[in-house]
Amino acid sequence: MATMAPIDSTDARLPTAPVDDHLRHWVYRHRVTTRVWHWVNVVTLTIMLMSGLMIFNAHPRLYWGSYGANFDHAWLQIGPTAAGGHLLIGPVDIPTGGLLGRWKDGHGRQQTWAFPYWATIPSDYSLAGARRWHLSFAWVLVFASLFYWIAGLINRHLVRDVVPTLAELRVSNIWHDVKDHARLRFPAGEAATKYNILQKLAYGSVVFVMLPLMILTGITMAPAFDANFGWLLPVFGGRQSARSIHFLCAWGLVGFTIVHLAMVVLAGPIHEMRSIVTGWFRIPLTKGEGA
Image 1 (cartoon, rainbow, N blue to C red):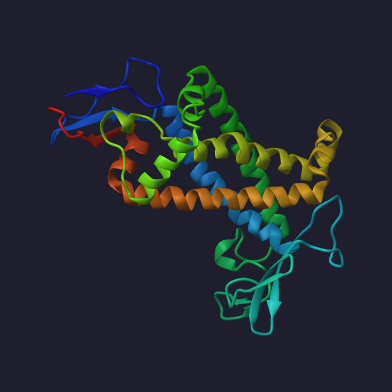
Image 2 (image 1 turned 30 degrees about the vertical axis):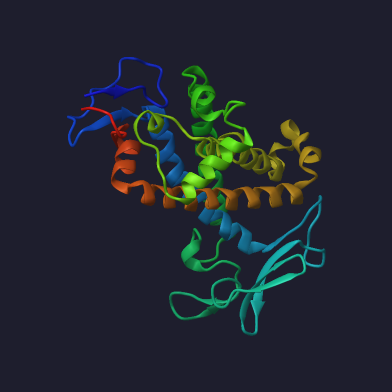
């Protein structure tokens, strides 16, 4: 059995691989820090998204700048209509039927909050309750992210596996990966031990862009942090701009998650789930390889 280099570990003293079968290699793909951070984020970001939607229900409008109220111009808003509900993005009016803006709760009663009860924490309207959930898990996100970033720098996982090289950023290389993904051609053999450029760009956008922006805009929106982090207000252009960026990053993470889950299913959910639970991933041999 051939054991390949792990994707995110520089430690040669790896756990013992499972017994090989069907002429396949075992690859130690994710070390403990990555796996723990992944599953902590699954729980944390789910609760933060659902509690955040309840907070958004209190004022379902977004603005750019320092101020925002009912009679100010909103670039996005969700509300009820006679026919159901709608999403307004600038001048674009998108009907949402009974999904957003006007919907029926679990008791069959009509409600006119932006997001339905099954998508929020708590399910019954409670701004105070949603804030408690959101802020509690915000601290989990902050400390878990700091732990991951520090560990990733120490073991060089971020530099070695997530940051793309100049050669990988060539348009021809990116286009090649786009075509392979469109044709559902997944890497095998040695190529499976490394993130491709699309994975690096996707993971990098989460690790280096969206999560830091989520944390910093969250601090910007909180008046309690003004004394020590007041400089963030002009950086983001005011609390309402910070709220808009926070909202966009949250849905960016939702989009990333949808694509991520789709790729897991297409690539083989059993093997992918095993790798993020145990660290070990079984890949087929490339053409011409021996056992």
